[in-house]
Length: 159
Image (tube, rainbow, N blue to C red; front, side, top):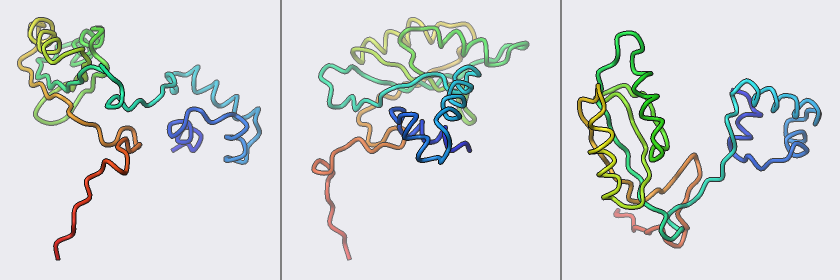
């Protein structure tokens, strides 16, 4: 795995100067590699990791399992592309296992997500079934622990 990509994944705020020092490579070469990654689509963008539990009125997140009938010519790609176009949808993943697509959806309320699933997702051609799971708490996201030490329940060991 490319160490530069790993460093940018861990902290996209690293400066070229810092990356150059960490990787023992010239700043010009680091800039060139980053530009190549961006131009080729390897780097798709940069985001801050937000602890939404600390944000008032952050909304609700749901993970929706979709069982679908793949199209003969395009497989799962066509329906995944269609699902991806909805504003409510944050992520779409093709899965191996008991369902085909995992869809991450954000909404203001549980009811809003329920309406999205019942009116838009479940009525799509090719969708066999849906199962919705609501996120209650994120403890770790993209390798970052989100809960504060003082809020972590300390349990006694039983000997």
